[in-house]
Length: 135
Length: 135
DNA sequence: AGTCAAATAAGAATAATTATCCTTTAAGAA
DNA sequence: TTCTTAAAGGATAATTATTCTTATTTGACT
Image 1 (cartoon, rainbow over the protein chains, first blue to last red):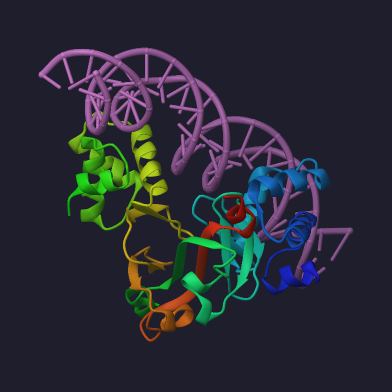
Image 2 (cartoon, rainbow over the protein chains, first blue to last red; image 1 turned 60 degrees about the horizontal axis):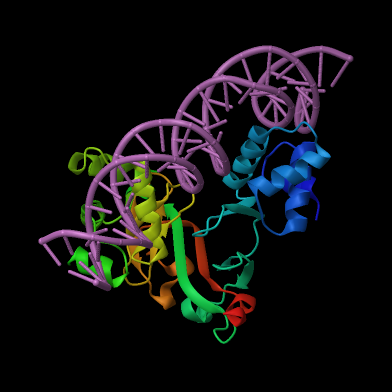
């Protein structure tokens, strides 16, 4: 995958920092701001945390990145992929992408002979009827 | 609904503050810490923000409350109900509970002639195979 | 190469959450 | 009831998370 192209497609300026962020995010799968910052500092020793936040936020706004907010878990980020669910272990914190198969959703989302599902959370966002008509 | 019973069922001590929190949360439907704090201070003028956080967290841990973390939206809390999804308007912030009908999930979760769906997020949490077998 | 809007770094400022410490109180035992 | 104790409350400090400000630099496009 070519990060420069990806950034341009999303009308974002290509900078070494952004390419570095994407590269790191790609190899990590998903990552928190905290981890990303400590990783990225190795490559860009003087990068600022504010820069990281601004870049992450603009990439989230442009849908290049997806923000994942799981209960009892730090917000983390990933390069936007096909729709999928996230399984988060309440004990060890492991998290795992799960194919978004409609028929297996909710309690059936993961194999319950091996996983123990405690909670599911579904968030849909967009425009409500009011705001949609005002566009 | 009787909040004392509810608290006892979850093995939590019954205190006036907790009853007040639940009462407020029940009438609000869902509420942020910020709003809850400004409301609850009217009733318990000397309540501390830390107390609020401690109570909310223990009630979330006991599953009495559910924490809802939606993208671009402040974390809010509600008394745990039947599984359901949340629709959050990216424009006005309105949020609305949506019946968790498996067949309508994802893009079909809300009526797309009136809503405009931008993102869906599904989070499942519990124990991963490793942690499950270690129990 | 020259221009300019956008990005960066640095650090301050603000917001959100948790920890600490000491006092008070709910809940069950005596 | 009263006693005992673990848990809860309040005040505030500490930590963590996020955004803002300003001066400087740089990528993208003439």
